[in-house]
Image 1 (tube, rainbow, N blue to C red):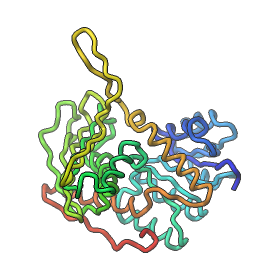
Image 2 (image 1 turned 45 degrees about the horizontal axis):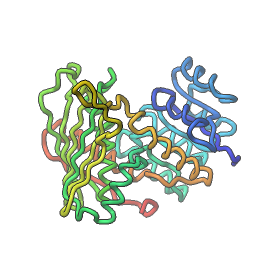
Image 3 (image 1 turned 45 degrees about the vertical axis):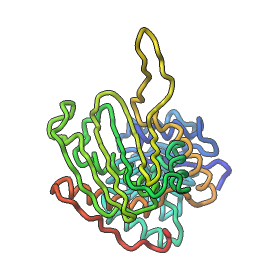
Length: 337
């Protein structure tokens, strides 16, 4: 492997293009040598801006391209499993955007492939673990700074959702971030999910159940609630308050510059997740590049992706049935302990 890590980026939509931009600008030690996307015109345009990068419409071809040392997957969720398995066949480290797979069965197959290799090579893009505020909250909880955690109150709001966004995606593509954050912050698995749906907001497209309120129970007896509202209209907000036996801690209030003028005060609200979590994405990529250069990964692994998929599956069942649904988890393989 060369001193500069060669990256194949699979998927050149908004997320993939954002990652491509970060390599070489804010993330050193790596460069994009191949890109893949089913949109041939778009992938050629992206590749044209990268010196020496090859363009492909087939992910397998990009993964097999000369100079590829690691793979970043930012394609739609249903395409993840096939691309990951191609990368594992070549023993390449992978950073896969969430969800790892749309269903737990696919994630289990990925873990089985890693088990056959005897090593973990897949990292899931749960970037909140790299956010400075989340990291401070994790340190506080681990140190017992507010006593045993009782509740996590979470809010996840987007100004507007894209046209392809469905009611299921509120849980599988949005709340999945809170699922992983809760598991990580508390060090507990989620055992049951209940979903409540108020009358849809006026800004939601016809048929979109937005907002929703998701209630999760954990193996340690804590309760996690999530307000997911993807058409709030005013901006992007992610907030989390931990309530412990001896105190509380809250992150995500966005206290940047506050202006007081003409009898009014106020500030700005981020409009996009790539702005709110810009530093977290940079830290995530730097850590991944450093580990991948050594032929390994050290972030959220395939088990974390599997657990999130299992919780999402239970959440979708709960949303459709209106009934509290238990989360079914397989036994955790020794490779992920």
